[in-house]
Length: 125
Image (tube, rainbow, N blue to C red; front, top):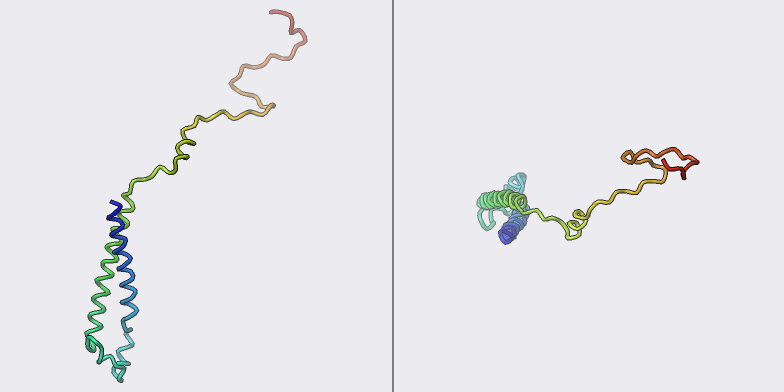
């Protein structure tokens, strides 16, 4: 699946560069008025209106390819297997947790209550 991702990514980048190039080559809507006064658009390779149709259709095709490859890349990226991270992350997660040390003045609620300090410690009960 990695090779498919690379192929689609390459097509996506080429389509993006193609769309950028075609948009920059095209004339704006206001260029038609300038062409009427001898701008030289009628002497172009595709004729007066042929270049607009060709470039518009080529831009539409490349924009469609760009859109499809965008969706395909999103699908391929969402279905990739998730990595567990680094090797050290597993070692840290599997280590047993140790009980935190209590301060000397803290009282543990689970320990039996201590007898009051008496002076008669030596007397057996």
